[in-house]
Length: 92
Image 1 (cartoon, rainbow, N blue to C red):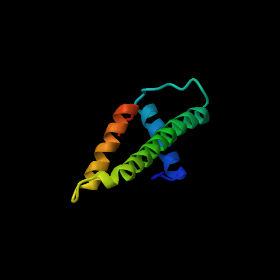
Image 2 (cartoon, helix red, strand yellow):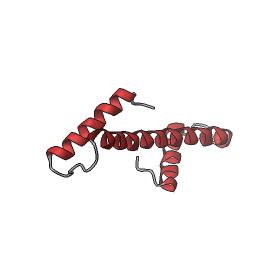
Image 3 (cartoon, rainbow, N blue to C red):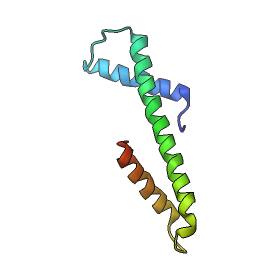
């Protein structure tokens, strides 16, 4: 995961503060419960992206021997990730 837990927590707090400041939300649950839900959503999204990256790398490795010489492997990896993201309905 590219972000540490404390970084995710800071983002979580900033998101909720921004929503409150703009009066886009009115909390009906305790603030800590709302922060926990936001934190979980961000964490789950990042974890899904990590799994996607790992799956793309595994596919790339599986078919590496079939690539033509001089193929741009980074470009191909990005295309694989994009295709997997589309199939899994993940927004990158």
